[in-house]
Image (tube, rainbow, N blue to C red):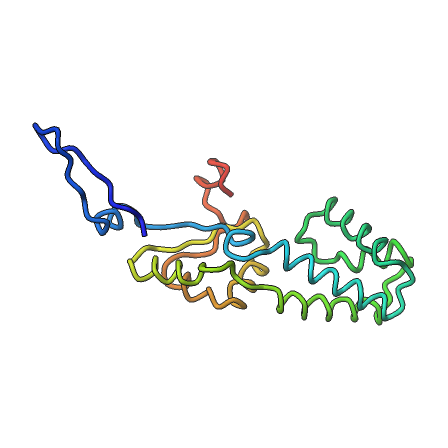
Length: 184
């Protein structure tokens, strides 16, 4: 809870304590980043990629775990952490073609591990519920692709905090003011 603050009285050196409920009338909205603020995105990504690498090796990929990990990391460094065709590019570069058995094993293992690892940070749900009860509008500003961000929100059941009060803002749909301010 936000502590109360003090304001000076007229013609007096004494200060008056303003109730904390007064603060909530001044603050109307709170905007959060999604990845690595509400959920531990990097831990989820690491676990999902590691599971995919193991599954692709089990399906016949003839590289060591470290070789595959290094190759995937270089693809993410070049094209971004949200790049959706990383396993296709890996197999194209390593094998010269996309082996459907290997890529299918990798994608399924990635999805299963992603869902198992996608959890909000401790106390995030309670905090959002408390802010919601106080009548504050809640928003998410994310640099993730819109579809992926909404999938994460729905999977952790946070979409209901946003449906009535705000919309997910991404670089694709952020308003010009946010773009100019560098917040998007």
